[in-house]
Structure formats: C-alpha cells, structure tokens
Length: 316
Length: 209
Image: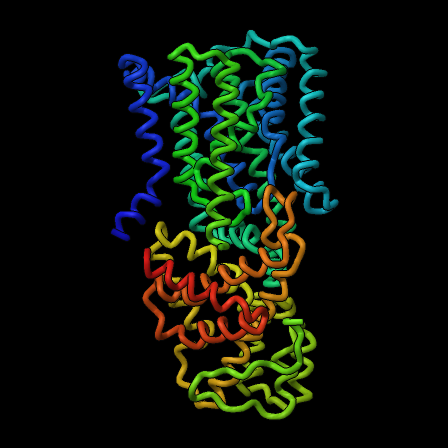
C-alpha cells in the first residue's frame, strides 16, 4: 500500500500529462494525437522548454528571473537586425546574440548578488529596460527578410519527422540534468536554495554561483529566442511578452519549489509537456486566447498552491 | 536563548565520557578562527584528535590558507541529497559512504576519542542551526515572504532529520551513522526542545513511506 502511494506521488506529474492527453484526444476527435500534431507540439514547446532550464536553476536558489521574456524579444530583434540591416553572417549574428543574452544574465546577477537588489525587482527592471531597447532597435516594426537557411533551428526536421528545435531542447535538458546531478555546481544550486547562509559559511562562493546561474538563465533564454526567431521567420518587439509566466508555470508545475532547494529536471520536462499540450489542445479546440490566459493563470496558481500546501503539511 | 548557551546538554549515549575542564567552551564556540586559537590554549597538540578533526574540517587540501567548513557543507548538502534520493540511488550510497569516512564515523575510537568526535559533530550541527534564524532561511516566493521563527524552527527540524536519520535510513546505514544521528538530534533539542515531536513524526512518516 505504501509502495503504491509512493509510486503515485513520484509519478503524479506524468499521470497528469497522460490524463490531459487522453482528454484532448477525445475532445478533439482524434486530431490531437496525430503524428503531425505531436511534431507541432514538440516545435511549440521547444523554446520555452529551453528557457525553462535556466529558470529552473534560478528558482532552485529561491530567486526568480522575470527578464527572460524580454531577453527572448531582444535576441529576436538584435539577431534579425544584425542579419538584415548589418549584413552579418547568420552564425556570427547568433553568436553575438547569445553572448548578449548571457551578458544580460550577468547584469541581473550583479544587481542581485553584488548590489543586493531583490531578484524580483532587479529582473523586473531589466525586463522593462531590455523590452524598451528592443523597441528602440526595431522602431516597433517587424524585421524580416533574412536568409531561409536560418530556419535550420526550428523549421527543419530530420527525415521530416524530428524537428531540429526538439533535438536542441532535448540536448539542453540533458545538459541541465548533467549540471544538476553530476557537477559540483549542481550541488551548490541545491545547497544555496536550502540554506544560503550555511552554504556561504561552508565555503561556497555564493555570489559567484549566482553569477553563473543568472548567466546560464540568460544564455538559455537567448537560445530560446534564436529558436523562436527561426520558427517565426520574423522578429517582433512583442514576441516574448508574458513568456516568463509560461516558463515559470512549467518549472513550478514540474515540482521545482518556490521555497528553493527542491526540484528535478525530469519534473520540469513533464511541466513543459503539460503546458505545451494544454496550449496546443486549446488551440485545436478553438479556445480563445483570452480564455487560454485564464486557464494558464489558474494552472500556475494551482501548481504554487500545491507546493505551499505540501510545505504546510510537512510543517504540521 | 537556545543558541549560545554556555552549559551544554549532556548526551545520553552510552560509552561517552565527561569532557575535561575548558573543553565545553571550545565545543560551544562557532567561529573557526577562535576555535583554532582555543586549541592552543587548551594544550591540544598537533596530533591530538580535536586538532586533527579541526584541520580536516576547516582546511581545504587544495587551498590550506582558506578557512571553510567541510562538515557544515555536509549539513547543507545532505538534505538536498535526501530530497533527490529516488533519482540518485547509487550517488546516495556513494555520498553516504563518503560522509561516514569524512566524519570518522567508522573509526575505531576509545571512549575519549568518541566523546571528542561526538562534540565536534554537535559543533558542526550547532553552526548549521545558528544560520537557521537568518532572514532568508525558509523564506518563500523568491524571498518576498519571510518565515516566522516557528516556521524556521520546524524547517530546521526537517533539515536536521533529513541530514541524519533520513539519509541514514534511506541509505540503510543507520548503525554506521548512529553517532552523527545522535549528535544531530541532541543539538536540535538544545536549539529548541519542542522539536522532539517533529523528529518522531518525521520518523513515522518515513516508516509509512
């Protein structure tokens, strides 16, 4: 009996995904589980799946990064601008964009770790700043007309079945899982999230770890921006607006605690797939975008609520 | 006040002897520099067990000049490892074996040595618990909601249980880690005597799966 309840607890998130798939499969009259739609879902989830990896690291240390939506937007605009307006080679533009995204993450880290601004405020400020910068660069207009080979990151697929962006996402999850489980830094993330002061006293250079975490968050958000640009074929100044909330929902839904120090990459994968399937299912069922926002907001509230209730139960 | 009391609660563990004069203060002190200085004042030679334990605990082999606390690291790391025990079975066993070796829990020690080890272990836990009253500890919603003192103590009980009884039971090394578990429990009860019930409840929860 106990073994069974343990098994259910550990795999509840995957059970939720299965139930969700079954509901949409029935409700959409079979359209949800076609090969074409599953490939479509893997394309749709890839960019916020990639961004969720960096967010996982940040939430593990009990912080938050609200700037990833604007990093995605800025990378979109800068990469497109470099290719279209400055005539820069595609790979060089990608490299510059990723360095810039990592740099923004580092700026966030300096504000949080060195200056001591709460993460929520610091990353909200940089969200506003870099969203504004994206508007300044693009003038609020879409940037398109770059080489079709840029589609390699999202529109291309191996044997017309496995999209490159899904492979990038899987590789990023494997890297994230390796960092968390097999490196000293991964241990430091959990330790800082569990008890930052004790981690500092034990010899961990907490500020340096925070620099790394926020830089990684910036890097993964940048990579997500590249994939999104490749998928859409045009850079928009509003493309990343509100994306951070989808990403936070995926991470918290995947079992990463808002209290810090708890969570696994496999849980986050399940969270990403649940949100991806939910979005796709609602689109298939012709649910309006506003209703989708309501549903996603409720999912975030429920996920955080479950986390809080489990903490309370543990305490009592 | 629970922390910083000069008179320490005596352990109820068989085989331990009473500490000689002056050593109570040494084991109550949390600052590594002060403790290293006190060692000299207490006349502990370089080869004595307390001196060896302090060296191993505070000095990194790679950077001997930098003072760290490798036992405090165990206190920080083990609760996290416990939480991920389902995914990291091999790693859990390896880490617990390493902990047993690093904390000298498998060493053959005479009653005096065992007593010194016990109090050194308690000192590490005491240092960990001293951080549990900090502003950031047990806070939620990205540091926006601060925890109350009661919540902090409850969370400390959970963390201490995970780093001792929890991890020992999860790895099947309860016998080997008994001294560490006793040191953790005794220090936690000195920190807040009301937390005994929480430890019992955590034990029951573990047994119930």
